[in-house]
Length: 244
Image (cartoon, rainbow, N blue to C red):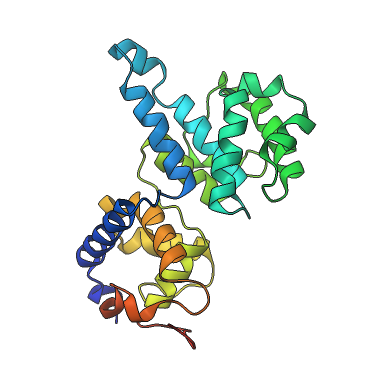
């Protein structure tokens, strides 16, 4: 299967139908996307355009930034609970700076590396206040300059926080795209570059949350459920030695 043979429209139609069925069973979106949708819903309930504009992207971007940082090396259900606890106390960078590092660590526990994340969150909040008037920056370069922020987090903030066209490649997106034969890359960064070259723009934003869910439920890292995979016709099963 060459890149020109990849039927992205068919693949995404199948993924979207599969995900709709998954959600109808009560399964939520990945944690960061869930929080971003909640933030967007909160904004849409504002009474006037002026109220909506006042909260347009900074608050949503802050929610996505915080929750994505917490999500690193952490299970989805832990990320969701930890993020909600912290954001209830720190809905803005200014509010977070009012908290002690130990309190932040306690609020996000048992997220992985919770003490390191607490320290980085304090540093980020300080930078946002000193250099960006308390707003999350909306460029990849500025986001990557923040402590503890890599390309995955930066792209997710741009996509989910600001509604910009960005491709967030995490371990699920990297694994599935290579396993299926849609790309042939060694690192998530290379996968992002490859997808930028060939993936239609309309699929840049949804590819992450669709493939994260797909990777959690079907295309598992070990022994994927190939027997019930709706994308079997579009997958080369590269590196799959055992499946169910």
